Length: 574
Image (cartoon, rainbow, N blue to C red):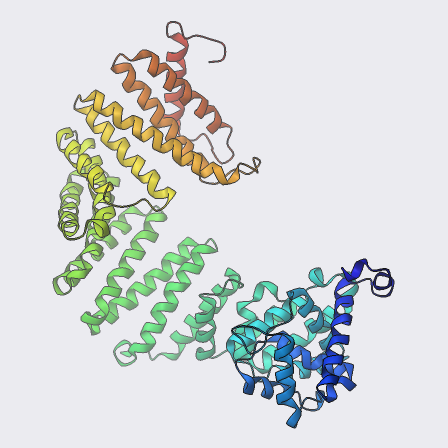
């Protein structure tokens, strides 16, 4: 609003500076009314206001100490520090903090840029920042680094502030290097906002840091949203390297259990970061190192560490599976199952993990064309899952449904159709015990319906098969609709989940049309087949669908031929 006033527009073209000028006159008047010497020096007045702008004090004592730490840079020292702190609290009150930062954020960032760069040189600016922030704790340091990083961003501050942003960017690395325990970690957690100079300084600190600093940074980055994955990976790699280098060569797992736990956690995070940055092979190797370490730990104290070892084997099996290495994945699953069996003999609460391990073994037997060996394992998993569900349907219903679904599918492939129907029916019962919490669960439930319909059709119960296939089709339509709904105003955006959901819908619709024809319900069959063809055209036009599902394409061609050749149905639009 001030920028719209003629005198403001002509004197100060930057609206933020216009508002700061207005605020400064207000600060001066209030300081004068309270008899503070701050009113006599605008530069020192702004330096004093910089303190609450950069961090929120926990209490009056910390606020006064922060002002007093400005030393010769501010007149708010000695007996004047406490009343100055109280005045700042009156100026910018906050219900939960001693004082509030200046609002809006961009105004506080503009003040920070102006005050710090008034020091004249990067060294002087760095000394000012060290003085202002000497009383910070970790959380306050992070708030300060976000404000300063944004203030030093030329895209936010504008082209007229280039010299100032460059000076501030040159001053910040000194803060990071002088107090790495607070400000290197704070800068790392807010790296998205930091200029290149700060990023380089933090990387330099990381490369020279000891284990404790790296561990503290690693812990903070695990929950930080402002750090990029490449940097998280660097910190974790350095931490793993330092931990491994600090340990003796022999017998250290038994003699240094806490260090072993730290290393195991770091290796777990290392695998996650490697996976995220697109290095799944390296992620699998990191998980293998973690599993080897966990094996040694379990050997020293099974009661304490065997659960962790079994979990490591589960993780390694999943990573190997995702790489297409099915035989090694199967061996890891079998090892994990043996460990979970031993754990459950001591601690029954880990029975769900044992069910999942058996399920993984059975699934991999099926996928490596050893279904006959997989069936008893899947039956074992389903049996234990049923026992668990008897005690708590809500908690164990999902796991039971997964077991019964895979068991039923495998029985069908072995042409044991009556048994497959029985397991599929139990699967649908279990699926009704819990609330669906996501689109993924809704899609999975549609898969259960599809399988039940298929097994019913295989034993000649066509009408029931049609009923369940119709329910499945309706569920798949719902999934497609829910995926598309948030993007309706932006039709040029294609949700990543859409191609797979459309493909499932097309296959279900063609299957439904086939069942309807078998039941001599020709008109309904033609209507559903036409819907399937329209959905297939939509799928073929969807970015992200490669057309690689040959079976789907052939099925479509078959049904297009049937539609075109059916009596009374051949029309141009079809």
